[in-house]
Length: 413
Image (cartoon, rainbow, N blue to C red):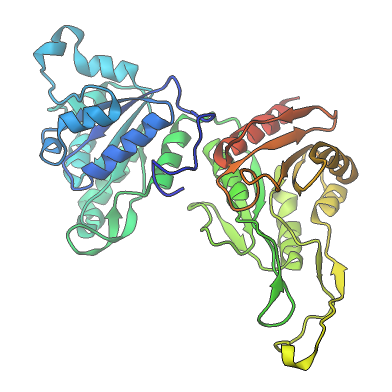
């Protein structure tokens, strides 16, 4: 998923249903991009109430913002239309979260000083809801000691400040200062509102495929993208866990802010997982680890001119899940994933019993909507009591939330 209008979402997942987001827009060039983010939050089910500073109306019009959010854009602290309701108090009370995007250097300085000379500033002083600032400005302005001090002060109030992106900015300079990309923004908003039911837990997640070399050029692998494992890691962090990731070679980058150990082969993954597992309270093996590897990979490229037929001798790789089950310490929760092509429920039950897991998540990879390298998944959950839950087609982000709901419930029993 790269933007608020992408297909990594389906009607089954509206995590912000019933929530009110007061969305503050300030006077920066990224205001037009932030309006799209407001629309994206609406797509996640939120009621989005836009509040524009006097400077913001120079970059986006209240009419356009209202059209994209479905709510009248508030611009004035002393608007006679809202006077009887004391608008900043009403908005402060209604908000489940206040988002400021883009957060300019000027507005963050005012907020850090506690100024309330406009509607958004007054809302910030009045609300008890979480507040998320999303800075966007010239890189030199962002790195200036005054701005850094203001950010520290905002954080000392308990507010969250989302790190801006790096790259080219509207002024032509390079560096930190771009409004954070949608995935990071979405993740930050969800994290502010997520239950912290995994707080204090050390979680180890594996993701992606492994590659088993045939020669220096070729390898055996599978089509895993790592998306499901990355979603599991992001969800756990949002819910308060201390997350460590072990990932095979993927084209998608791992989630920012989560320590990630990169590996290539099944043997490397086994070694890294076994070294990290003793400290983990929950281990989620979402990686698609190769079951077999060439017994004797060539140290030189195999030329087709050298042979008419090529026979490969394969040997089994380490069964990481089974070994983890044998080595597990008391109180450790072990979750496995399986990708099947037939008899999904029966195969999931058998794998859970054989490997001694606490939960097994299975999916049918012949289904084009729940196979490899797609943003959605349709899974079954099986526990040791052989209770089976069939989840509908959902984005992998939503599947991860549902799986963590089950894990949290298992650990409470």
